[in-house]
Amino acid sequence: MTGALAKLAKLSDAVQEESSELVFQAADQGADYMRELIKGRGTAFSARAAATGLNKGPGRVRTGRMLRAVDRQVQRGAAKAFAAFGWLRDYELYFKFQEEGFLNRWSFGGAEPTAANLGKLRLKARENSSRTEGMFALRDSRTHVRDVVVPKLAGQFTARVKRRVGK
Image (tube, rainbow, N blue to C red; front, side, top):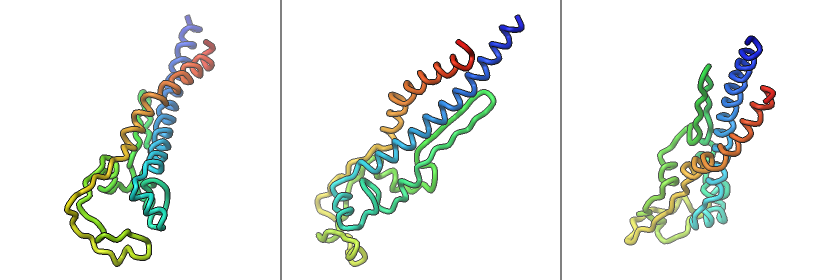
């Protein structure tokens, strides 16, 4: 009986430690994937802005603030582990508009903005507003974690627990 209890205690410890690691890895991979989506889902405007030197990076990276705000947090307790990822640092309202899309009611007076003339351009209301499509980086990274990352990690979790406990 003592051997069975020892094996059960070993199994309990392995499950707790490995599940905590699974949660950490899922959040880490979710944050990494979200950053990739931000860099990869530009607009026609962001491509022109990058070509003129206005954007500091690819995709929707103008200043880098939105990209740097992506982080992950993990809380581990005795019986549970919780994780979150997304814009967890220095959130700014414009992140939401980039995520969900927005209606452009303003233009730069017909001139194309460049790094040299940006401070000189005046915004003016458009007669026909255009729509900037959302990048859906947060939404799609959550879906990726749920559909791709967690199933892969679950298989690794099972194998690691079996290896630690001795099947």
